[in-house]
Length: 166
Length: 166
DNA sequence: TATCAACAATTGAACCCTCAACTGAGTCGC
DNA sequence: GCGACTCAGTTGAGGGTTCAATTGTTGATA
Image (cartoon, rainbow over all chains, first blue to last red; front, side, top):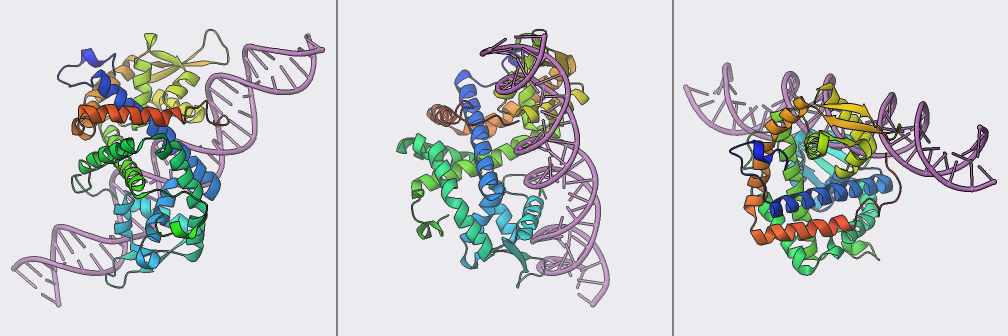
């Protein structure tokens, strides 16, 4: 917004270094997420967000999780997750089950087939993350990235946000 | 993919520190982009990506740019940009014009109305970026973020990618 | 136990993006 | 100047996400 900057009063605009950092982060992330999504779509026929769902399920005892908890962990809205589980269920990679302790609840369960698909997808996904992120950064930069990410998360945790969204 | 990791051979998995950095970056970015998109949608009725289009146009002499150049600068596919300009044109914020030097080409031109909308949208957007990113980081971290971003971009520049995509 | 607010999850419409196919214009070789 | 190839941009279908509304359940209170 350089050209508009001087024309609006009362706003603390970004300094040059801040602007450069923001744009570098923004563009890097757009390119990267695009590349990850495309690769996942081509290799496994699902978007990257769905892969993350399968990952989270695979990391639990029993390969299942409450919908709402899964939504939190994948940083997804309830609605989005519900639609996503629909698709994954159609493919037979995930199943729904009633929650034994709360009749409002549903469990998402990763099937054998889903686990197989995940195991199939993981190596090239990790390779991609390595190639485009991890292996391009020094160990120091990797620590910096973790710190920066955690700082940003701390200011945006769902508990800080306003209302329910979906 | 911790649980699957040991079961698949030949893949160099992420170390703990690498995994943490990657997840922190991923989650921070999901939360942040979500928040930015939501704010822009509520305040100005457009997604963040459309705002970036207006910003790029506002930064040029004459407030216009070739579609293909605009696509490169906004890290967008030609198709995506074309659809986006459709929407912005419907709202009267952007106009299309024939390119004088190449009859295949089109210019996207930011209208007065579009510029006004942008000027309206910019302050709270910048405030958001400040609040959730810039002001949470030290000057040193801001330099680190720029370096990290640029390293990632260097490995993903369109020239490195394979074919045309839209 | 009746009532009412909060919660868990789903639904459908509207919107955005991707992909592949297409139109029309420039370019190169002959 | 003709054909084949490339380039700029658009189009429409299909799929993902968001938002607001809805269903059914739980918990608190009187």
